[in-house]
Length: 159
Image (cartoon, helix red, strand yellow):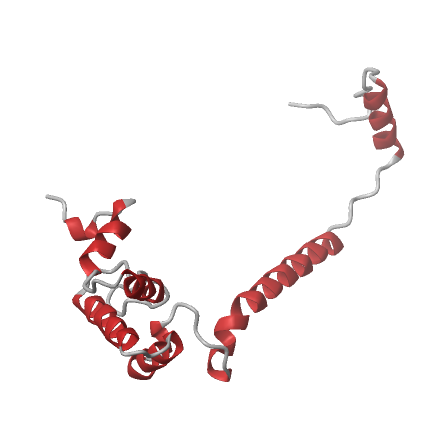
């Protein structure tokens, strides 16, 4: 038996939009939906409040709707939710000292990974210089490059 709440597909967003539509004001509903896409569901964590069907997400959408209908700005609504639930509720956390590692972390890791790779490759090249060829090896290489048969008389017998 399939669970409709877990079904994924193009109609999932539409179903969430229809289920969440409470107000008769289409402009207010559009603002609620737009702001709800920027907020993270605290139950699902990888879904926006607009997409989630969790009861907490429904409560959060209703809270957004009530505050927008009361004339508050989107910034004020987000500030209220952040004060209540923390920075985790927004998909793009604010840039502060406490979130600096979150913003700079991927770039730092990329620089460290590329630097480590370059260091490792340089070390590998420096550790194993190619062995110099003796005169017999040079003669075999020249013969192979020119397409002549190779003289195996200087090589050890093969089993």
